[in-house]
Amino acid sequence: MVGSYMALMKTAVIPEFFARLRKAMPEPETELEYDNVYQLLVAVVLSAQATDVGVNRATGPLFEFVKTPAQMVALGEQKLIDHIKTIGLFRTKAKNVIALSHLLLDRHGGEVPRTHEELEALPGVGRKTANVVMNVAYGEATIAVDTHIFRVGNRTGLAPGKNPLQVELKLLKRVPEEYKLHAHHWLILHGRYTCKARTPLCPACVVSDLCTFRGKTVAA
Image (cartoon, rainbow, N blue to C red; front, side, top):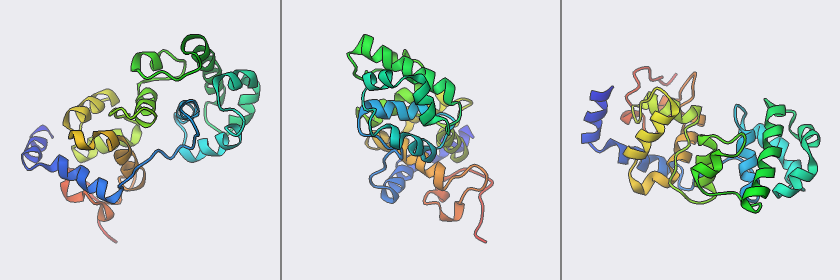
């Protein structure tokens, strides 16, 4: 894999890879629905091991009246559970959301911080969640590696790695600067709708010829 990747590098495949994704998706955005940074943080915490569609279905009514950490704390854990009980791990997530809301009020004046260290100190917030918030809310060129991006990075040869951190660090090193801001969204959407886990849609893939995956599917 390393040898094949280095060969691809010599032909400037990676810039072409992202140029094609940009052409196919000029303005990629998160599919989570929110109105402010705090709601984005909550939505991303709730999205762990859940679909964006499922999270949006639960947070739609919730976010109509809960827009700040103070309002979430006032709502309370049990009522939050009632709103998000259709989401996996809802009890643990409700506990974390209430706890992180308290910390935002106590340590950050109710505002969502901007750094990895501060974000990851919040209950229920790991590196992936921190990267999403920093990228989407604050325009930082971070890359949050979820299951889709982990799969795409390994399958295509773009950024092979044994764990999400390895894939993230390789992507940060290899993705050209002009594409880095939106790389996370291009890769996650590509993995979600084209480079699917069970049956990738290789015949419809705009970067199929740049991909090192040996098990490409063919048109029926």
